[in-house]
Amino acid sequence: MSKNFLIGLLVLAVSLIAGDLAFAKITGSGHDFSSQAWELNQEICFPCHIPHNAMANTGQDRLPLWNHALTTATFITYSSDTLVAEDVGQPSSSSKVCLSCHDGTVALNAFGGSTGSSTFAVGPLKVGTDLSHNHPVSFTYTATLVNKDGGLNDPSTSVSALGGQTIDSGMLIKGKVECSSCHDVHAAKGNAQTDSRKLLVVSMVQSELCLTCHKK
Ligand code: HEC
Ligand code: HEC
Ligand code: HEC
Ligand code: HEC
Image 1: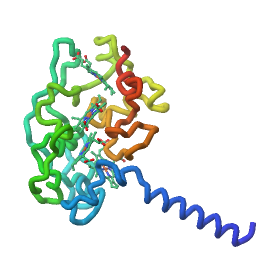
Image 2: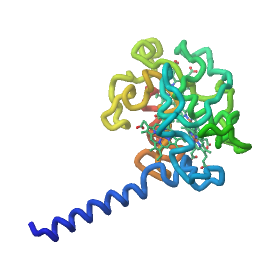
Image 3: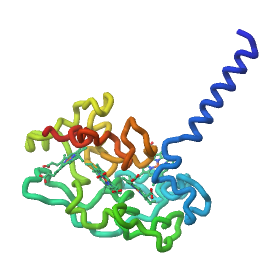
Image 4: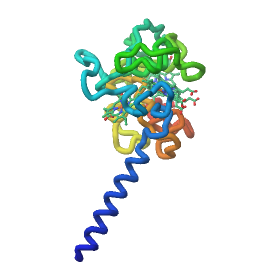
């Protein structure tokens, strides 16, 4: 192999990697706030993450180097007389990180120690603090629930939509259904593979997302 050929390969590899970075998943998605007037540093990750002096995550389910102010709201949780799950409680931190922008009580630009200004989630982006009319979150989904309910897939078995992963490994957070069970916070816009319309982890065509867990 000639030296020039090897250098050519190297240049090709580097440009492929660079191309990939320029079109990384989150870039240009609904969660890329780098061009918002309120993101003064024009960073993508900073409104949510910080590499140092992040929020302490001891005793929390999931606060990955978190930089955004957390909601302190008390939520009305989902209930119904057919619901079998008995532990639908206040959102765990994994869902609270989403609600910290989407409940509409915390400013979008309340990060990095700033309390933010008057930019809040409004309209359909505002899930609000009344979760009684939203799919339940922050409850345990195990084989015990499957046996009691009769209409759910076993979370320890893989479902084709998850490409070999099980519901438990691919969707649940510490065995619980959370916002991130259905949404990928870093998803690319217009990625046909996962139907990133609404940043979903599985396509909604033929309600595939719902049928991943529900046997209906
Ligand atoms: C809108 C908020 C938001 C933005 C912006 C964001 N993240 Fe995240 N990130 C999250 C949340 C929420 C989680 C927890 C993920 C989960 O629950 O599945 C997370 C998890 C992570 C994790 C750990 C889990 C994993 O997926 O590997 C890494 C690493 C990460 N983010 C890196 C980044 C980087 C790098 C950027 C910028 C290019 C970024 N994130 C931008 C919200 C965000
Ligand atoms: C820093 C604030 C912030 C955090 C944290 C955050 N979001 Fe968002 N999210 C937004 C904003 C603002 C938009 C609207 C962006 C736009 O105008 O396209 C949005 C858009 C969305 C959309 C709609 C996307 C679309 O294309 O219609 C979904 C779904 C969503 N977020 C879910 C989540 C989930 C789930 C989490 C947690 C894992 C989360 N968000 C965390 C601020 C946030
Ligand atoms: C069981 C699955 C599931 C869970 C859990 C879930 N979502 Fe969603 N979410 C969806 C689907 C499906 C859509 C798209 C609905 C549509 O397009 O009509 C959606 C849409 C959204 C939107 C966009 C609304 C719009 O019209 O632009 C936001 C924001 C959002 N979800 C936030 C959240 C937050 C925050 C949580 C956790 C409290 C959460 N979701 C939990 C399935 C889920
Ligand atoms: C990650 C797995 C998962 C996904 C994805 C999912 N669900 Fe669920 N859903 C559950 C579990 C588990 C319950 C709790 C069932 C129970 O305890 O009765 C539930 C509860 C519900 C309930 C309330 C049942 C009641 O008795 O009040 C409805 C309705 C529902 N889901 C519909 C949907 C729809 C529609 C979708 C698609 C947009 C969806 N789910 C996606 C796991 C999921």
